[in-house]
Length: 127
Image (cartoon, rainbow, N blue to C red; front, side, top):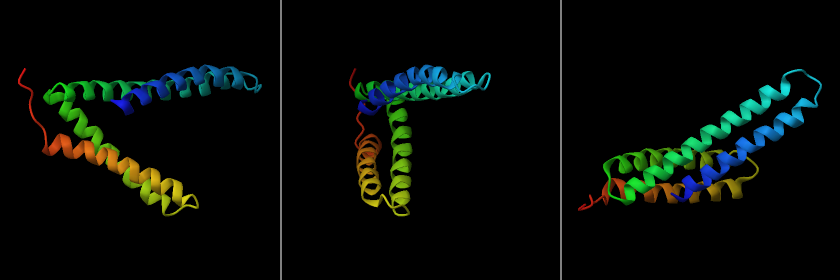
C-alpha cells in the first residue's frame, strides 16, 4: 500500500508536469509540439496513477483477507522482483554501481518479502 500511495502521488505529479511541459514546449516555435509532448507526459502520469490505485486496492484487499487482494499482491510482488533483479543486473554494468546495486537489493528484499508472505503465509480472514 505504501508503494501504491507513492505511485499515485507520482502519477498526479506527472499529470501536472504534463501541463507544465506543454506550456514550455509551446514556446519552441514548432506548431503542435507542446500538445504532443504534454499529452504524452499526461498519459504516462495517468498510467502511473492507475497502477498506484491498483496497488492500493490490492493492499487493502490483502489486508482484509480477500483472495483478489492476494492475487493482485502476488502479481505486483513478482513484477517488483523482476524490477529488482533488473536494477541489480543493470547496476553491474554501469559506473553508478553502488547506488543502483543498493536500490536493487532493497527492492528485491521488499517485494520478495511481500511475495513470500502472500504465497506461503496466507490466511483467509474469518469474516
